[in-house]
Length: 209
Image (cartoon, rainbow, N blue to C red; front, side, top):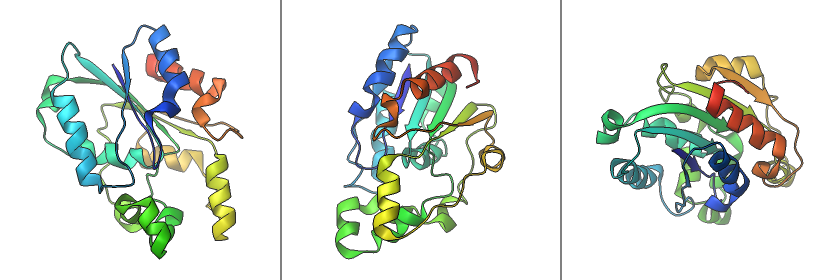
């Protein structure tokens, strides 16, 4: 099974095209809905652990995360839950992962009304805290896929801030990833980009983009 976890203020519907592509390759798949703007990360972990602990008829699980969900996944693998012993972990693809937190989202969380809209999880994106989280287990093959979204560029423009340029090799080493790739995309939803979807499916199957 491939478990897909959307980013901040997203729903499982962002994964519609990827979900279809994964099914065609013979996997089962589920995209998770969770109240990303209403709870702290601890609340989302309880939901995901409950789901994974009660999976039936599944012996292997792979993950695809988008954006802020990469932080949730890191913390998920820090837990000592029954599913860790019951399920074999396949591969993990992190799309635009926040392995260093997010200066932009953390900054926005401090603005009164924006902080209320983004929710408590945004305040947990402090780079000083997120960068200290343990990496994913080294025996799990993980891949990093980067692509600038329209939403993120718009947020940069509105807040007069600029993200640091991504150094793919440094990101790969920091995360202990097996492969890393950058795709240009102007789509609001990166998972509507056929090349991105194909690359994710390829990594899930082979461990390479």
